[in-house]
Length: 316
Ligand code: SAM
Image (tube, rainbow, N blue to C red; front, side, top):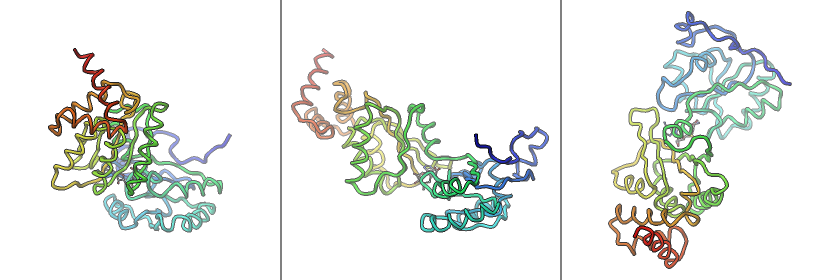
């Protein structure tokens, strides 16, 4: 069994000390070790009391971008020295920081926003610290993927986080096709980080791979003033974004994956829904809509037509 040294957090604080703790001003000592500290993803209130205390009492804060973190520290009146720790110096800086940790330092790691290590630097130094026998303490808090998931309304008991979709179309399609292939065995919600300048291309690929009726949520600007959840089909959200004068902000793309939403293995009803959605959203005739759905599903026109007729026969 492995044990960790005390972090000063073993006892929960009685109510009477909350005002002091509320500004992260408690002087409970900080055990030596590496602290992976979550910071807000927009709203500065989304930082925990414990995160503030750790940032205040650490010997050093390793930051993805020291200028970005300076704003956060300034806001909370924290004067702990900072050092840069980013994608380009991750390996060399990790070695240096682990030496200090082995000598008993208390080092906090933060990224520009959210959980370090999640599509951000942090995992490498955590692994190096563990290999060197140094205690590692996650200090949980804001994270865009989980905030988007719980706000999406999609199933949250089973999900996969897939980071950023590749920027090149061919690679992006391959990732989406791999997701489509694994869905019958592993239904759930797939979560991707996206950028404003790639989201339209990404949604076009989602339509091509999963069909226009694929249920999608796009969570924009979470925790910020213009927070927005776009919910609907891939085709519908694509049309919405294409109609906007500009697409801005940080965003998370979520796809609900289930055998029912799976093209190819989907039912005639799903195909019929896709055809109906296209006819409505793009004012297409039945045959044009059928052709589009067939192309998106990678099936022949006659196969799509048979499915469509089967569904129409059931309705009669
Ligand atoms: N470490 C961060 C976390 O825990 O969520 C993620 C960092 S990653 C470099 C940045 C991406 O996260 C953005 O491109 C966007 O996809 C997502 N993101 C970050 N903040 C967001 C926000 N407020 N609203 C929506 N998405 C956000």
